[in-house]
Image (cartoon, rainbow, N blue to C red; front, side, top):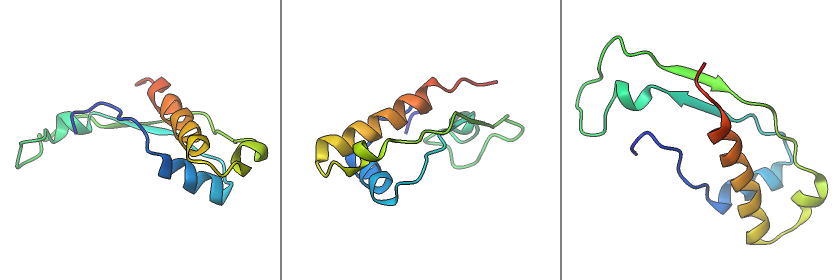
Length: 88
């Protein structure tokens, strides 16, 4: 955990495909600065911002494909959406 968005796992895509619900990507800014990795106490008065992206509705045809690669593609699209969110 270093404050960067990591690669998504295929399991995220599997859950999205099984539930067939829209995804609302969100990104938290400032959390790593407020509680750095090796710190035992948070840094008080650090601003933390939660930004919300555009809703993603995956096509039923894409959700119906039952392969790991398809699940990974779904996960990758969610991660791309999260990475595109900018701090306001």
